[in-house]
Length: 337
Image 1 (cartoon, rainbow, N blue to C red):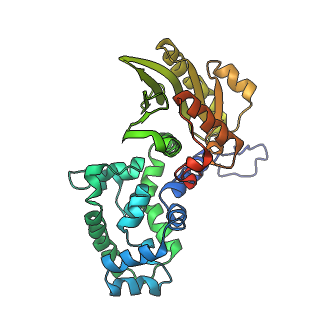
Image 2: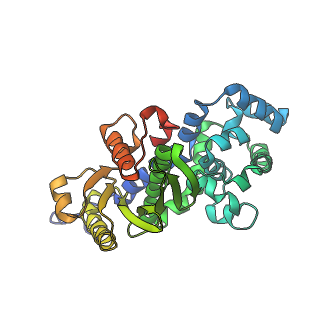
Image 3: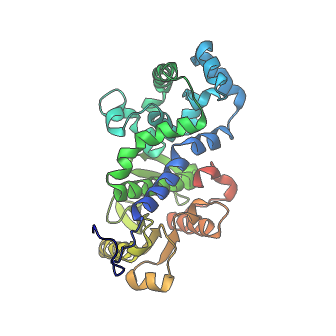
């Protein structure tokens, strides 16, 4: 290698696959936990209420310092009104303040708030503690801005990315899969919201139009189980596999994994099988790899309320659950995009 005069030397082409995965991971994080998610939520809320809570919870000196940087207060300070309307934004502030999930949620104090970030859920027993949570994190925010001599949206973003960094490099495929499942959980929760009777980290229970209980469980093999209870009998309805990875070269292997899960579900009595994927594929080849799949969906398209694929997903889901949802019934269309 010291002699570079050899014209026959072939230098291999390196594939930036990890960076492509990082890009899509960051894109998903931005929609859930970064500034895009915050700004989209704030755009739907009453600014007068936001301003009132900022003045109620944050001292004037701190608000003025943030304003001197050209930023609105909610970019730095969490308030109950915002967290209650989009609980997942707890992740925005956690990332801003530099805490990993493990460090932040490990223990009895912050641990119970994990469902806010992970599933966008506020359990009845937790709701009363949201003001205290915000008051505590506002004190953390004040310590942060007191230690900085400059602050801007790019700096806020950089601080959050620094917190994310280690997690991005460690187990990126698992992280992408987890985010994909979280996105679909929120999508389904939003669609069926008028019928929900109970919700938890890994389940959504509804009462359908036949006055029967339907259960949507987020587990594994398959990723989502949907069943209906008829008297004392539980009838399996729908098996959904989520393959959210963005590596096109690996998609057919992932479809093979989905096929195995669907076959197991079929043996257990499920009668319909959907596969949600993160890349565009040739459907004929996809069906060769997973012939049990009855419908393929693209994860990006079904999160766009204006797309035909989203409408198809919504309509077929409602049919499977025996519920009737008009577009105007959906609680928050922006949560689907």
